[in-house]
Amino acid sequence: MSTFDILMPKMGESVEEATITKWFVKVGDTVEEDQVLLEIATDKVDSEIPSPVAGVIKEIRFETDALVPVGEVVAVIALEGSESAGETKAADNKEEQPSAAQQQPAKQAEATEAASDFSQSDRFYSPLVKSIAKEENISLAELDKIQGSGKENRVTKEDVLAYLKTRGGQPAATKPSQSEVAKQTASASSAQPARQEVKAPDVKAGDGDKVVEMDRMRKIIADHMVMSKQVSPHVTSIVEADVTNLVLWRDKYKDQFQKKYGEKLTFMPVFTQAVAKALRDYPGINASVSGNNIILRKNVNVGIAVALPSGNLIVPVVKNADQKNLVGLAGDINRLANLARENKLSPDDIQGGTFTITNFGSFKNTIGTPIINQPQVAILATGTIEKKPAVLETPSGDVIAIRQKMFLSLSYDHRIVDGALGGYFLRRVADYLEQWKLDEEV
Image (cartoon, rainbow, N blue to C red):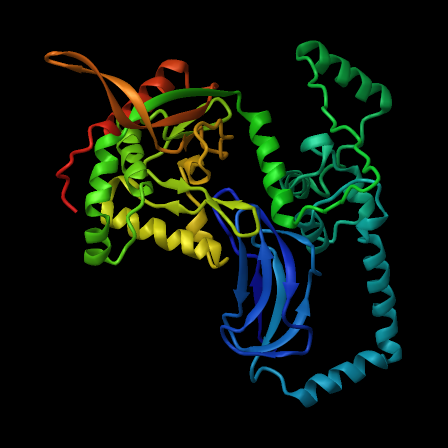
C-alpha cells in the first residue's frame, strides 16, 4: 500500500515548532488534493495546511494542542487506488482476530510498546527525541541513561544521535550521582554567577474584578516580549524631526497618487523608504547576534507592526525595501496590512525581517520606547505629527514659525549597537525625512 506523509512545514527561518490548533479531518476520511487538513499556529502566524495528494486519512499522529517540531510527520494518507475498501476491511478483521501464530509477535510488540512508553519516565523528552527513540527501538531504560546536554540536562536530538553511534560498543553515559552534580554545580557557580530566576507576583482577583484569560496570540506576544528584554539590553535614543515639507507634499499629491496608482498614500511608505536608505548607510543596524558573532544581513527587509482588530499585534515584512520606490512600498504595505487584519497572511509574509517600524502616531502618541523584535537589533517608533512653534534661521535673523514636527525613537540592542551608531542612524532617518522635496514626483 502506497502512503504519503504529511509533515509539519517550516514556517520561517527561526521557527522550529508549531502548535496544532485544529484538525478538519479524522482517520478514515477521504480527502481531495488541496483540501485543508489542519490548522497550525506559531509565534508569528496561523496557517491552514492543505493536502498535496488525494487519498484516505490512514493515521493522525498528533492531537489538537500538540506542539510539533518542524519536519515531523503529523498524518499519513493512503493514496487513492493503493488499497480497496474491501482489503482494508479484511485487514481490520484480521487484526481483530489474530491467529495463534500471530499472538506471540503481538505480545512481543506489546512489550516493546511498554518499553517505549516514555510517559512513565520522570524526565522530559521532546516529541522529536521520542520519535527517534521509537524508530531506533531505544527503550525507556536506555533513554533514561543518556546524559542530556540541553537546558536543565534535557536530552536533545544530538544526544540521541551521538548515543546511537556508540550503541553496542559501550554503555550510555550514566546519570551523575548527587555528589557529582553538587560538585559540577559548585564549580559552575564559582566560574560564573548564577542568574536569579525572576518570578511574577501571585495576583488575586478582588470582589467585582473581571478575569479574562489571554488568547493564544497574546500569550505568545507576552512570552516574546519578556524574552527580548532578557536577551537584549535595551537603549533608546530620540530625535525630533521637522517634516513640514513632507506633510505639504502629501497633502498636495495624495489624491493624485491614489488616482494614478490605485493605492492610498500614507506616511508609512515614506518612513520605510527613509529607514531602508539609512540601513544601507549604517549596516550595523541591519544585523542580528549569534553567540559572539554579528550577522550583517544582506537584504533589507523592513517589518511593519500592524494592530489587529483583536487588540493583538503582528509584523508583516516588506522584502527588499531598499530596492523599491514609493509606489512599490505603498502597494506592499497596504496589501500586507489588509491581509493582516483579515488573518490571511502567509508564512512568507511574516518571516525574514531585519528591522521593524512601529507607528505610535496612529494612536496620536508622541513618543514611545518599543521592544526589539528578536532576532533583530533595533526598532523604530514614529510618533504623531503635530504643529509646533519653532525657531527658524533666516538671512535677516531668527523667526518663530509654525512647523510640522514629530518624534522618532530608536530602541537598540546595546550588545552590538552603541550610542554613536544608534544616534547616527536615527539622525540619518530624520535627515531623509526633513530633506523631502516639495516637488518630489509621484
